[in-house]
Length: 113
Image (cartoon, rainbow, N blue to C red; front, side, top):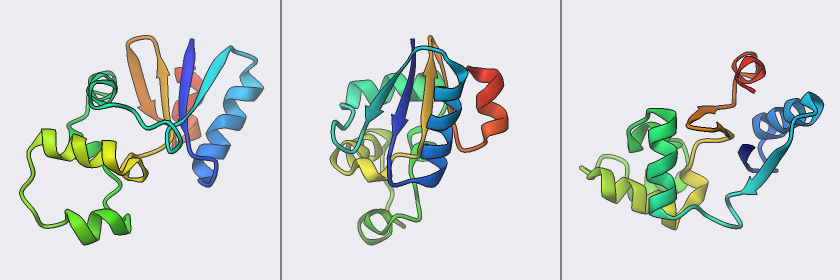
């Protein structure tokens, strides 16, 4: 089943959700701000995305700028920062089987799903 890690306040995430709804495919919405992923879940997502932890961070978020920017962090510390502050996780993430993409570009989402 397709999953979308969704933030309803984000226009790109809402647009991606609309594409999923219009696809008539079965999918699950994960409101990751309300139910943040665990470190293990993030590690699995990173593998599916083929990303390093820092590639999944929203570096323009004030939490990142105020608390982490300019610091030398390990991958585990970056993952922990996202667990503690899920707003730092790039969105939306669309997961299908063993693969995932960041769904900001709808031209990539349509063929992916």
